[in-house]
Picture 1 (tube, rainbow, N blue to C red):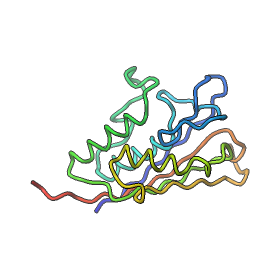
Picture 2 (cartoon, rainbow, N blue to C red; picture 1 turned 120 degrees about the horizontal axis):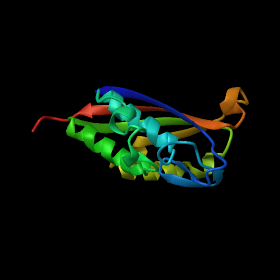
Picture 3 (cartoon, rainbow, N blue to C red; picture 1 turned 60 degrees about the horizontal axis):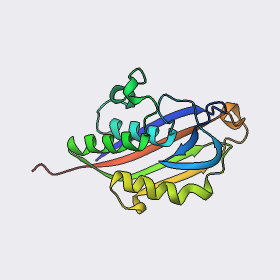
Picture 4 (cartoon, helix red, strand yellow; picture 1 turned 45 degrees about the vertical axis):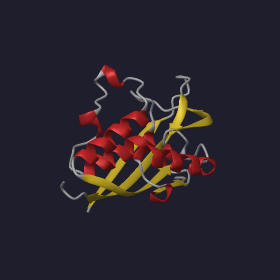
Amino acid sequence: MRIGFGYDSHVFDDSAGRPLMLGGVRVPDSPGLKAHSDGDVLIHALIDALFGAAALGDIGAHFPDTDERWKGADSAKLLENAALEVNNAGYRLSNVDATVICERPKLRPHVDAIRRRLAGLLGVGVDRVSVKGKTNEKMDDVGAGKGIVVHAAVLLEETAPE
């Protein structure tokens, strides 16, 4: 078994006119996040957790923000690619636990859709994907509503060699 931990943070970009994407789900009535790709902070943290657990580096090593191929990229596609790399390295995902920290938007109305979307992208049952929303109790820039932070943990199981 391997445990991986991922972290990511992005600030809101009210001027970009891009949608907020969380876990591959478009969250309405909220500005998107400043990023090279689509800014899906939840998926970015999850990718780092997957790569970390399999000792395959980090998201920047696989999808660098200096590479124009990833400009505006759909993070859901990046997650599918990361999951395939982890599977090819001899691991399968056991479960995901993620905590999204933000003052806005309220996450509860979107959690079930996010869990279903992530489960589909990862090829696991929705019962293996946990997503929780928390505020930062008005502390620091996240608490002031300037951005979103995500912590993600994954458990990988080694697959039997064929």
